[in-house]
Length: 464
Image (cartoon, rainbow, N blue to C red; front, side):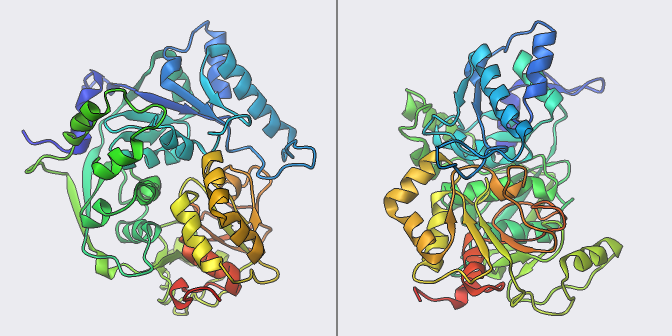
């Protein structure tokens, strides 16, 4: 029978099939860990006298609790003693159990969903897990990748397997040509606005169509990253020449690379394969998007009018965000801009923001920070002079890390401030207690920084 991309990978990894009595036992190819969700898991291993089953299938970094600033002496100003202890504990645990770790001394340290692909550890056909909900990012390579809880982190460390019910499959087709100024972030926000924040619940999403086929790997990672924001278990894109060219020559790329590419190419969904659900969008209908409420499904074209609330929750969200139904979102005063996160901190993202900021100045009173997703991105961006563009404009160029996306590392907004953010979640208080978040593309975020209000970046042509 013809099979989908998801079904092919799933079938390759079944250790014990699912039954009415228990979920399937799924083998895990790659386990990514960081300092926040792993300490308790290692404690359980130690208390039970267990070893890490496959340290060679485990890769660690520090990202969530890490400051994005350095002190004059090179030390790092951790926001709390607990945050510093989290990092120290991870480094001690991974040393004890022989796990490759990219700490502050590594040129590959960075956000876990950025540095894993950079090392070539993320590969097509894999099952990949991490104690982080945005593990779906890695599905951009044609992998089943999803977040797990702390208890499950311990399970995978101990036996390299996981109990899981098989999700249903949903194909999301976007065909046609995107208009100028429309980015991958706009595409995924448009999709979530279409199907809703619960529209993907119980499903693995496969993104299909010419729009995704023509996207760079950076764009594909942005799309798959936010699959979880539609409630999906994971999101995938079939591997192709773009995928193979990205992985070629990376540290963990297979020695028999051409043979691997042939196998990876065979993972694409077969003609005639069926999905449990299919959704179609026209590329021409997608415009630059921003959120106006307190979840990613409350998204709208930047040149549109704020929709009226349809229930009490949306009414409350509009009140929290101080948005007026029926009015424009452009022109809303901005207090902070954040360009970074596992959604939009890669080179394509930084280049896009730099094109808007070059020759312009950040408006006084609009604190703007640009945070590369990894040490490799920081090195490459500085080699291109992007950091000079940002700092000349009045933005802050920071050290790699999760930064304001999760606001647990010292980078956060003040109560009531409006933040235009390239991150993935705009829940109330996500970027600081009482802070209001508008999700947007790097171009839109950069435009907000230099204009001081939410601005359609398409209206800014060239350098000022």
